[in-house]
Image (cartoon, rainbow, N blue to C red; front, side):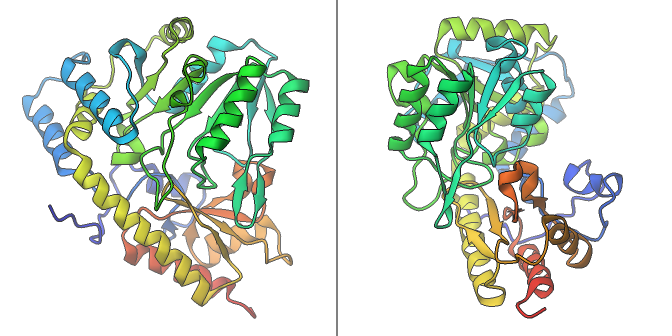
Length: 393
C-alpha cells in the first residue's frame, strides 16, 4: 500500500494536548507545535477500520482481552524482537507512566532510592518525588554527539546510595540512544550484583534506524528476565497515545504478583475498549504502515540534519539511533541562557519545543524537537528557528 504522510491534518478542536494546551500554558497559539511526543499522522488504516467497527457496533461496555489480542501481541514481539512470553506474563495498564508508578509503589518504600540517568524523560523523576522516594541520579555522559553510560558512576551510585529500583529508558528519550547489547549486559550485571530491580521503559523499541537494533532487556539472560519489568505500548509505534493502552511484561511471578497488588489498589480493572481494539488491529496488521512511517520519519531526521548544517551550523544535532525525537544542541550559543534560547524559539521563531532542562539540569543548552510530522511543517519550523539563530545575529 501507499501511505500519505505529507498531507497536513488539522488537529485543532480534536482534544489534542499538542494544540489545546497552548492557551492554558500561555504559549502563542500561532506557534508550530513540535513538543509533545505524538505523531501528526493518522494511524494505520487497519486500526481505523477496527475502531470504526467498534463505533458502528454501538455498545461500549466493559471489555476484556481475548485470544485474538494475546496472539497478536505475542506474534509482533516474536517476529520483530525475537521476544517470547506467555499470556500470564502480560499486564495491561493505561500507560507506561502508570506502570512505572505502580512499580515504584510495589518494590520500594517511602524514602527508598530509585535510580535514573538524566537527562531523561521527566515523569521518571517527577513520579519518584511525588511518591516520596529519593531520586538517585547517575548522569549520562555526552561525548562526540552521543550519550554514554558512566558505568563507574553507575555502580558507585548503586553501591553508596543503595537504590532498590532502576528506571531505565531504552531506547533513550531524549538522547535517542539505542543501547548496545554489550552496554545492556553491563547494566544487568551491576544491577544483579546489588539486587536492584530494573524497570525497562521500552516504549520506543520499534523505532530504531540504520544498523541499530533494540535488544529487549529480558533477552540478556534468564537472570535479567527475572529481575525486570518490561514496559511496552503501541502508542509510539502506531500513534495511539490517547487510547491509553500498554503491555507490561513481567516474567518473574513474585514481581508480577506484587505489581498486580498495587495495580489493583488503583481501582483500575477493565482495559479501555478502544485501546484494546486498536492494539489488537495494530499488532495483527499494522506492520506495513509502521514500516512506511518509520522510513518517512528517518528521512525527516536526515532532512533536519542537512537543513541545520546548511542554514544554521551552530545548532548541532544529536543524531538519534532511535525514536522520532531529535535532541538539538545549542551549546555553541554560550552568550545566551537556556531561558533566553527557549524564549526566542517560542516567542520570536514561533515554534514550541521542549526545553532540555525539563529533562534535568544535564539537558542545559538542548531543545527536543518532534520530527513525526509532515515535512512541510518540519521545514517551516526549522526555517523559523534558523532565521532566529542564524550566525551573525
